Image 1 (tube, rainbow, N blue to C red):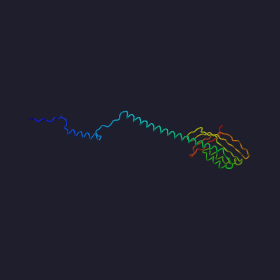
Image 2 (image 1 turned 90 degrees about the horizontal axis):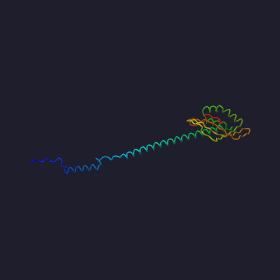
Image 3 (image 1 turned 180 degrees about the vertical axis):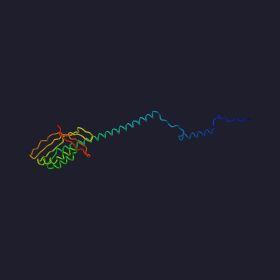
Image 4 (image 1 turned 30 degrees about the vertical axis):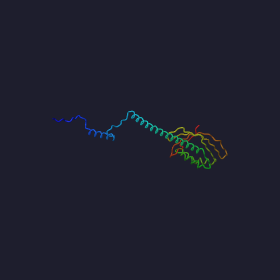
Length: 199
């Protein structure tokens, strides 16, 4: 009899099938051989939206914080200018013949530029007149506000009341006056560089 060739299309033997199944089981247990879980378009879009919102929140927070700091610094600068102008006007309108040198020095310390140079040049005559007439004056600032500001320079309007007495015993009632003083940052301090009375 002729030998029959084994059917190549026949089902694999139980041994080979079981070995393949075992291999397949091991792969499944280890997670190998399985396709990765793909994100759906909705999930991807949601992540993108959250990322954009987070970046927008950070940008807005940073901008708000920056503008807040800028506003605080500007307010502090305006306050320093007004305070320096008010004190400068008080120094200019408050003089006592008994401490004339000290009062004149206060004005010089709070001024700069040509104004300081001119005041210093006239200070000797001023002291002599004050001492001869025994002049005493007291200035009180009633109101002060920045009229114009340009960086570290500003014009300040100051309303001041000044009371003057002299050797004759005359004591004037406080006179209200308005002054415009130009303040300039000089060596870390705002100082008067120009001053004058206004109507």
